[in-house]
Image 1 (cartoon, rainbow, N blue to C red):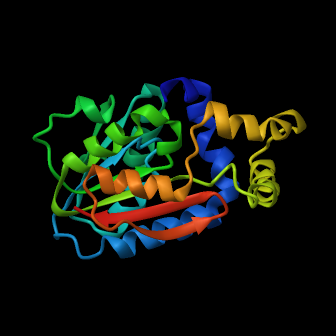
Image 2 (image 1 turned 180 degrees about the vertical axis):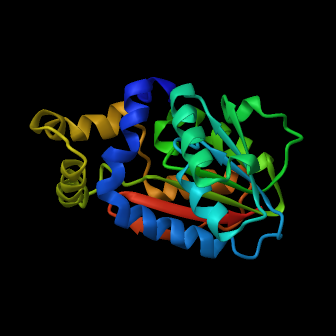
Length: 225
């Protein structure tokens, strides 16, 4: 994933995505509701933490929670550190450059979050990706996954693609990049249909994944280990 987020992309990430604030605000609101019954001093792992949006959202609502933010991009973590420091929550956070498999398997968290990361992971590596995250989730802890997910071979994809083009246009997509969207979704990203994501979550150790959010092709699930 680090090749997608160099220094320039990391610095522009929040501005580029600000046009979709209504979507992200709703998703983070539902994540906060989902996790509200965690222990008062819960420890949260954010995989692919990016610029820290989920930490900023949760830290305001739950002032005693602590966080580990993991990301392979040093540039993204630099931006994340600046945002967390500005918000006054950096002292509750540990930021680590790396991948989920780099964390000791003995590390256990009350919740593990992977927000808009899965579609960057190759299909043949996706089960291992989920399994590594679930392995670091405490018993009865929560695993939350949000990613671009749709059946790209379905009859509905043609209509959904028009919606997705509008989303990308809001983010500054050019005519050329809009024309290449199907190729990007199928060959550059690894977008899986929702039923495959749910099956992989079950195989990784989540008994009953619940899809609690969808905005066009962005879907989010939670499950209890």
